[in-house]
Length: 310
Image 1 (cartoon, helix red, strand yellow):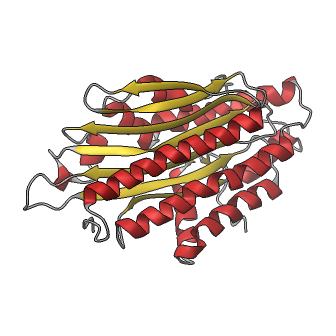
Image 2 (cartoon, rainbow, N blue to C red):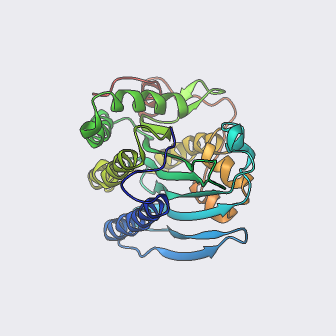
């Protein structure tokens, strides 16, 4: 595990990953700008401890109430607690973390919120007696407010197809991982209808893992944009917007209580404005509220359990 790649020097392989992530951000933003008709704001930032990133975001768009597509490549001298607890053998090492993370919060409640992330973590060797350590992670998941089975099947089918070239076992394994990861234990429900999620991916080697991550990143627009185009012009009113805001509260709860990326970013001295761009612009909480049986709002509960969408 974590052996340096044979086809390229390790530093060059890491640089190729960085270039891919930066290009992926640009491609996704260009597609979303065309879909929304609104230009993204660009915010380039530097981290005092090393590295930086580019935050691309819009608020108040025609389709997206908030959209954030973030690229970062940050460096540090000592692993933060969220990483060193999992890999105590790397304690004291310098590190690099890079990748693309996005969250899109649509205006229309019939369009689902979506999250995607692809990333690479590196702990370079300090001397000849050490090997450089690395692992990839990522995935994508869909959080609808109203239940459309066709949307869920399309999203999961695209995730499955993105992984197919790498082996038949990847999709069911990463799908289960996603269901278990995006689960609100205190609510007893999944955050949405899932997708795929993976972490600590280092075998069978850097090049193979990087190819898988590229296929996941490249599949995102195919998984999500057709759903947006199908649902964005559905008529809605205050009832649907109120329910959307209520369900967005669950999104906030997950990100602040369970999400590894949020915790890592805050613990590592990351840029708070970028980290919290994943939050919805409006959310609310109601005391012990339950939708009326038989309503479209009540139907969502049947989606918030792990199931085979294919």
